[in-house]
Image (cartoon, rainbow, N blue to C red; front, side):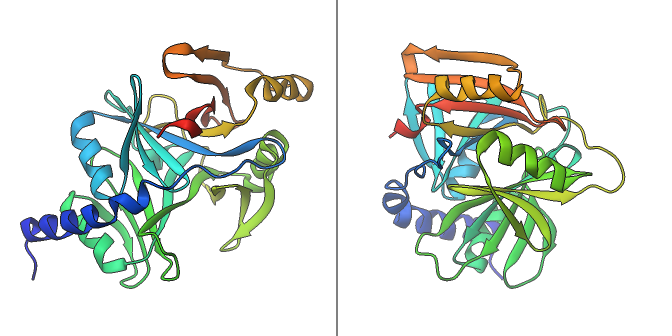
Length: 268
């Protein structure tokens, strides 16, 4: 049986072998509403520690001025240092999901970083909790060329169909379904809705997954459309010249905090 030290050496060497391939990945082209997948922003007690965790899982470091990100095909992971109030499973943003092309390799990676396993079917699906409260799902897609690709954000909601319609109306998402659950499909990934039959989960702000993010081609045009459908911004669109990025924030009806960005796609 491989020791943890041996597993770390193994997965690190394999990671170095595919870093160059992942470095070519970009955020996808937007849909007709100008929206694509963007980023997930995590609150972690130790940024340096969690940067290494996400690098081991396949994230490629990217920066633009003071903005530091870890790039995966279809998604950026951003980290902010702090103490999350609760784990992601207690909130509307239950977990984020990726597809991988090697089950054994990624199980070893999760073991190496000290993840705890919530579900492991032994062949193609793992749901695990990373240290400090972020849950991730890995599902095998043996046909994909890249080792890891962003696949979905899984939100908990009592009324998944109703919440899906909000994402369709606001982001121009396509109506979808996966494993019998409603989905809102956006270029680069999808938002799936996990039934919560007991109670409404907590809002995300200040928790392990503080907010999710979408890249918007034209934030001014998006803001005008939000005004016509009655969406109120938590933070109105604003541009940060230093990092050539425009941002805004809204909250979905169940409490998921959402950042809108224009310019994240240009981080190299």
